[in-house]
Image (cartoon, rainbow, N blue to C red):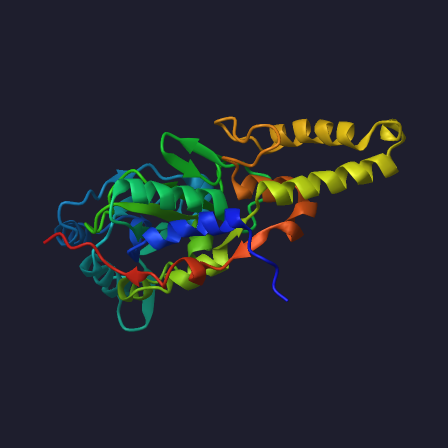
Length: 314
């Protein structure tokens, strides 16, 4: 028999009714050309990408393999389908008929998923739901953090990160949205996930599969967290002689104070004895024993598979 759904979870899930459309696209592409970007290809890419910037950035040698550290790194913002097809056709230097040497390697890919809504207030409601319930798999001991209206899954240097904001319209021109970016850094990470293949990026990857492989959604309410604290308090009274003489409510209040500090984020949420404003990522990472108590939410319960789109600038 399935576990009953709490009223607080139903209220949280009501946010998904505000999603009108879900689209996915390449938001940023960083390419390291080795030894350098050929002049003829630079002019082709600049023309095909319209008015979008195509700047060169200083190579981050720490995330590049040794043989590429002398190369040049270029950035493509929201690359058009024409740019991606051009890169696919010009992937190799050609020396005669037998020897092909790659011109470039992909060192960073940001896959954007926009949950399109009718208004900015609706986008903020959807964004709050995703921020609260979002889990990045294999997150480790990193902490989430926000800068302005943007929430990041990590402020540390890592090969995977996530950015979420609801205060700007979709870059596809579809209107207000909650914008979720899955960011992948390093040549090895992009290659392992198949994001180095221009043919796949041009024709459209399965964004739903990428979401399900890399992320999860989960929920916990105050009642569930209270039961967890209660069980920890009972266990502590049994196993630690220092607390044997204290009452259960006293031990529980002590744990509530400690746990509140552990899961508080940069805005000092949540308050003592509550999960309001807490992110499930911080709760999940902080307490291994709580993981079996959270309620999983499937991505297909929230949205249909995202449509793959390309920006059109010409």
